[in-house]
Length: 466
Image 1 (spheres, rainbow, N blue to C red):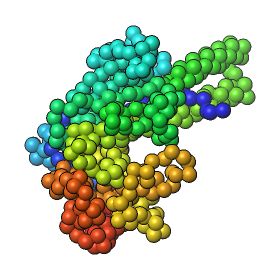
Image 2 (cartoon, rainbow, N blue to C red):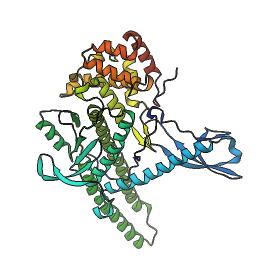
Image 3 (cartoon, rainbow, N blue to C red):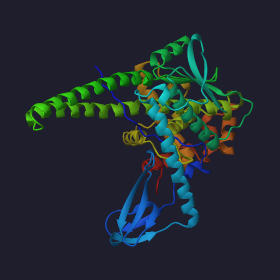
Image 4 (cartoon, rainbow, N blue to C red):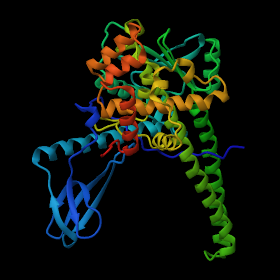
């Protein structure tokens, strides 16, 4: 039996629609620095410089993690020196921190609405969501949201549909900023979000697909279909929340009865079982907070991944004009699925730590797929219809992520005319190895050496110092 789950507010950063001018370099913020006589420097925004202390709002921006803010008062006696920003840089940092605060407050309100204890009357108003019929089932109600590049149709609870609309609005804005649309007059992608994985698998089977993956992009219909059991999990959380309320009330009542009998001097051996029960309840709730957070994270990673395929194939490289090869397409989708968008910036340059460890292990074991094999890969190499195909599929995905990361952040080829020429050459039927050689301007053996040397230097923050 699965562990009992309970809910608490999860902090997630969802920003406004603004994006940095250069997404590949948008992760570097200029900060005030307090160098202490002992300990690491403190970096952030200095709020106050008094005679006896300096107050700084520290800014922690770790690769792949939301920005964290905390305030510290540093005694003057502990300070060796201070590096202060110019007025222009200070104003820019202040704007970013203000925007972050707005994002925290806005998303906290929407996540609070996902709390199973919240009722429709005390949750956020669901503007921009229209009631429609679920495609293929006129008896089933759904919610609809239309944007420039996508339309969301969800038969989930309104809170989840609203959250999905916010996430998708932001990630599509990021796609458009990094890879501007090259075609116009195209209909937006339909994104169908199902309330359960069972319903998702039925929709896939109706299209003749037997998939292990819980999401897919159908280019023929320009649709993304995504399933999740987050809806069921929310229902489970409500039942557990009510059960825990009853348990705590019973414990409180028993404690009050004992206090009355023993005149507020209850023996420890009678209090201990109640304290132990409360700790167990708290432990279960903490563990299941992590479960809920992980389920939600995986859901939006899948949406980011498949919606990138849809955006690329609909607005940048449509099939009739020539498409990116699948290894590059899948590699980029993996990069963008771990993206963070906060304070008006796309934070995508960090190297996913799990994939980076996998790449290093593959290199050490001489098992990283050679570039030439990846260039000649086909769609079947990436698909998983049966469990025994997963290992080879994972190998292709890992190599695709590594090569796409290198070409995007080290070679800076994304959104260039060189990349357009590469796609056009493939469309004309040019041998994929020859077309790639022209793209990178190197013979393949020399490129492979540079590529693997880069991977061995690559750090989680996306840098690769020589």
